Length: 472
View 1 (cartoon, helix red, strand yellow):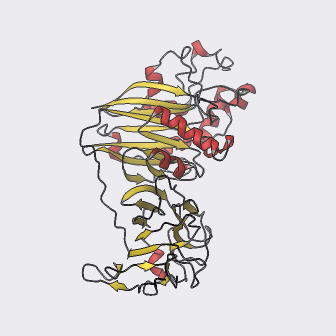
View 2 (cartoon, rainbow, N blue to C red):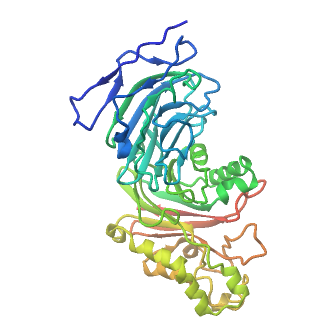
View 3 (cartoon, rainbow, N blue to C red):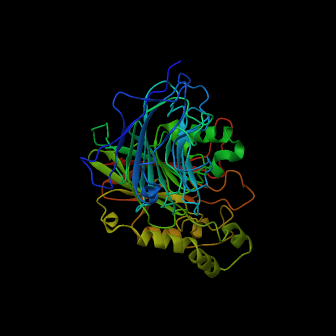
């Protein structure tokens, strides 16, 4: 049997300030925790004080394994146990052959990133670089697999990830039972954010962009934990959008993004953005459950700003219409939640977003219809019960110079009602509550469709909306 190689961490201060610390495996040496090692013990990195993780930092580690069953073992952690809501950070392995990151400050909601071995294997007997950056000021964590930014998470208050525990590499404790079955080299810790360079491989300007707004209904799980999510992926793949504004992500985001091979930004348990193109920046405009915002680098010379939102489902319009409430009460109800939320989001836009120079797209589940659909000639359609309503949310978007992409392409409401609610709740009011809005001098909608079909069964209670744009 091979004896475990010596593992030495070198402190190299020459290029860095006192708080910018790098630790490397001795060149040419590897920490062997595999089945070939006589002794399989992880390393205590006592040189790194856990207080360093009270702010921003960057971890990077190279790993290799051919284990058929990796289990859930620690690669880097300052936790005592593999428990998501325990304070600290855990970068480790999954049973499925991929890696995992979970983190919590012990006070706020814990978050975990669980990618798939389909896209991010670490048990294929190849060296893989795993990098995690934590920007405490921005409340953002980025995950990289072999230098590719596979995920961005809003940490939602989890800023201080320090603990009183020892930082460990390769195991959560001193024993061999919980040791990682594989090899580790080139571990790095830096007490600031150091982002790998983003590259856009296609040098041509993009002439078209296809966007999907999709509320996937409780993570797609309602029709089966695996089956439902697979159907969501199939619906998306059939449309082949470049960008997806996802609502009700609820734990399925990493699986869906990996299945698509897309960049992935999780703003909250509810909202996420998936993109064929790199996500270069994110923004905190409003409550994370209601609003996600990002800049996408769609070519070396082109960017778009993108917002994906969810507005409150209350008051329930179906109940108001059935109760024959006055229009004044209905409008007041809108302003009590949905319209007020949207107004705050619009006011929070960075000033440059209103210049029309960079295309700006807003999609999402507004839980409210459009004034364009509730006019005098449609008052007796689709359960409108004679109402003509100037819905505040669509009026706010119009006032902010946004164009309703679907209604621009399909102005005939009678012929193209686009009743996105609901594919399942047919006993309720059927109306259009999912939208893709846009503005900018270099963008123009050329096609827009409602999607509510799947070869077996459509997986969501919301129809999706897909719009194709021409770009200058």
